[in-house]
Length: 527
Image (cartoon, rainbow, N blue to C red):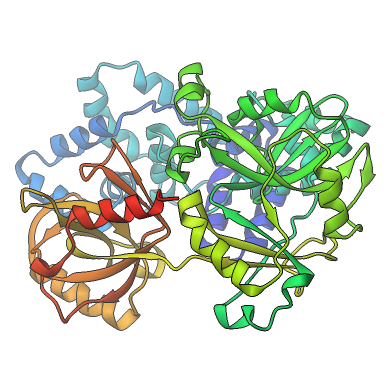
């Protein structure tokens, strides 16, 4: 079994269990170097571009010298450069070789190609692809151009490794921290005996909250609960053992390396402790937005400049372990009392005497940089999962705006044949439409089909897979937050934008202006 066969399993399966089982089988059966290089690719550790996409396009244009329009049309229809080239240049009659290792051979060939002069690479690439099957050519190009993705998370890969060698996943995550060496001995290194400190560094199952509506608040006995803000950050557990400090996200991702500033502050905490809380952007005195926090994610290196411009801190709201003692079976009020004695930033908690206090706190949430309130039973123990009667969340109503559709692109999966990915715009001070959001959800299948037909008939220009369309249709969008952004022409970035409804009752001139978003920002930051 090699990487091509694994890719076919992962790409054709919609079941997480099937993908996990395929990964386990591959890790156990594949050549050790093949599996090492596969793990490197699947977990995003191999992102250096050996072959630049611009050179791949030039190779296609050279092959279609007199019919460049044909390549453009194919690219627009397919929507992915590597897949387009694989369709056009691979040997369509070839059957993928799935038994022998191929990744090391490909790695050497990709490196050799990258050393060639651009004109030589452009000339040789089509004939090279013709020696490969369609799947092989697609993977070869994706792995070499830095755009490889295949429906599996890093966490799922780590879980499969843990199952394949019968080790705890937390230990695997710990041992895969930092640089990864894809060599034949990688599994042997992971199989080394587990230490007690590694066991203590495991995250505990997170307690999740159930949504609560306004009508349900009136039935609540306010004297039975505590209320705190629902912070707009990354839910995480901060773990300190005798030897290590670890940050684990709710998605079971070890994100320690991305937050060295939080780790440094945590050195003053007592050992053998687990805190549940939120990673937030900014400082305790000046909270920044989730958009700022995103700049810290998925980076190989956190520079000193980034630490200064985009600091982060941990706000604790629960204590799960102290001095090695498991506190999860204690009631929340007891855990909160123990937490209050620890020197760490903590979430403000209110003991409401009436439901009006909960309403008032929620109304003030947006001005505090929060996205609603958390309501927690005083006597609730800390158990994994979304348990009824323990914790609830009452989020703010979304912000809204009316925006004009200006660009559309084909979707993915079952929507690959429909233009379902929309770029939406509002008016600026010069009476020009500027993009403010991309939205991929919110319309029914019937509405998407109607819009797809309209988009195809009213396309003004094509930019690869993207179509510029007439500024005609208006959509009401909802979003959870708004922040300034230097990366966007509009100067703003929206949090979780999605389509709420198709406004067929209004025209493009009725869409909102940037001043509407400015007002929303002012309201959001008004305390």
